[in-house]
Length: 168
Image (cartoon, rainbow, N blue to C red; front, side, top):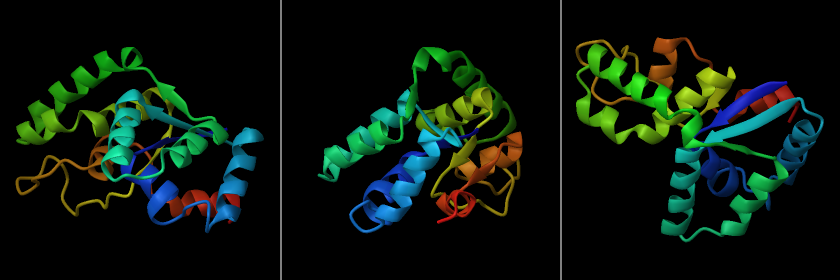
């Protein structure tokens, strides 16, 4: 079984922006089949869950679509208690190796998913694009998931490689 740890914008992309079930029912059906057959497992941190709920409310999206995503894909929401120590350690380490103090303190949601992915040996799915710079480079100015994953040698991708893997 391959585990995928999904970022907020990737969830919003799947559910509302780019791949809604009302248009791409085949993608949703095949994803659900892969979840039910235990080929893939979807997980998110509690931080991400709360952030997604906030965005759904803010954007006035239909919450039932998110609820269906969470239920039909049997998404495991990893409790803060399971990663909060790892999150504090990751933030401290990033403060030591980068000059991105405000970016690190504001990025607990993204960093929580990185902690969960590390602990669960999961691939992160995000809509963010990586920078050509490393997070320790002098000109690097905004902490992003793909760059942090590259630094810590974690798998990170968008939805397309997963769709290819499951055959849609």
